[in-house]
Length: 224
Image (tube, rainbow, N blue to C red; front, side):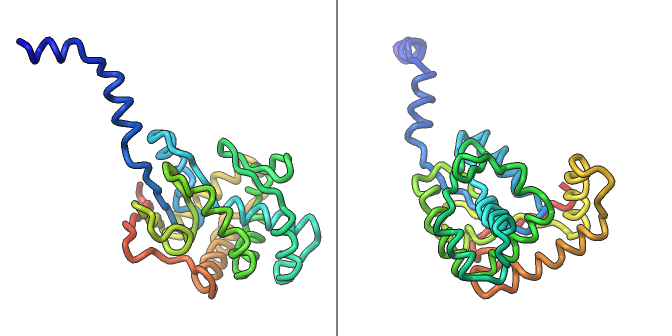
């Protein structure tokens, strides 16, 4: 009876809140190629856990966009380094801004994806953005997606997932996504071709190549 009285008087909402507050603030790294589902999974996971969602690929897309706007070649390392030094990039509430300008939708264009893949092959660009990525996830309680999060950016992340899918499935997903905004002015065949080229660049670059971390959980989302 005494125990039951204690249980009845207990403020269980406060108990749960305390448990959540004291729970480890995990850093969850989700890596993988384009179209594997990283963004969708990361956003949903962060929402369910009450964590921050950090899309590091958006940072490279931002540099790619700025390079195109400044007419700087993806091979102009010095020019790209200057862009990285002067760009005022901010990630807030799943949106990305440069100097107060919201570029979240602009950077999803196919040509920006291609530019991001090209500029990301340069160690100077990756080094310039490495510090920013680490600052964003330094406090934990975050789901971070990218291509080298578990291997380079946060090799000590508590949870690492490498999310993959067949290139045909990944290309079809991107096709459906882009068709909503570009109508019939896109080609599934070209999307798959461009994606294969990007996979090759990402996995064969000298600095931080795309590959699963040794302790990552590999997941194939082709039929999921």
